[in-house]
Image (tube, rainbow, N blue to C red; front, side, top):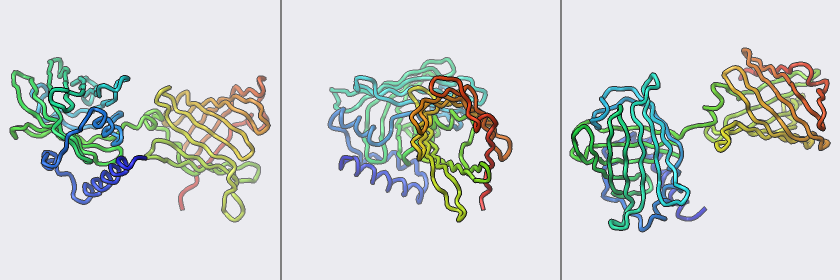
Length: 346
């Protein structure tokens, strides 16, 4: 990690603490006296990348009258993606606003590129609000470790006006955007963004966490699954519960969302050398279907499908289509469903 990035992260942590203690202060977002301008496009993109500003973001709220092309008072859900293009020469944000019924309210895109004439990043935006076109253009006012400010001239509804758009870093996965008229008219449009959690979305209500115990011939086999990385993955520890209450760990697993393949994956390894890779084929609140491929402790290839159903405090797992060493074969332990019961917290 570079010294510059370390400084950015420390500053971001201090800024986040200040936001928690002092609370939101939209007015401070417009104080650009201490902001600096990048010396190059490379410096600006490094600022965005190191600060974690790229990626998918979402929020919900109610429209205000800062724009003239969408009426105020409409509940909406916003979703956007900010990314660098393949050549690294422009930052692109695409976004949509939909109402409570999923009807499209607004769609548009923003492009940021280096302007040689002014020596700062410039942006251009356009889109449709309720079928009516709008456009805007602007330039970077400046940035520091906690925020970025752009000014723009926007046209819509037969009117042209200047807007100040401030993006504040409130934490690793949180941002606040304030869009305000430079002349102080109308109500500022303030949004609190969170980074989209593709993993939780793909689980579709299925919650894999908890302590689950399976009775295996008088022996308690325990599966402890916990959220990790701000609910971007699930970490699993498995093992045999010993008489003294401790656990003899025999396996570890990690489940996450593969954004490139758009599937949930899992890796699993045991103390005997069995290694499995799983992929979720379907998920809902009470049903999870997965396919596992890998090798057993002796290095023999295996392939199996497991359907897990949630019924109250129980998980019922059924094995099917099992293949060992290239041949259809279901071992005795997998011929009947396995039942795990959730342990209640003491």
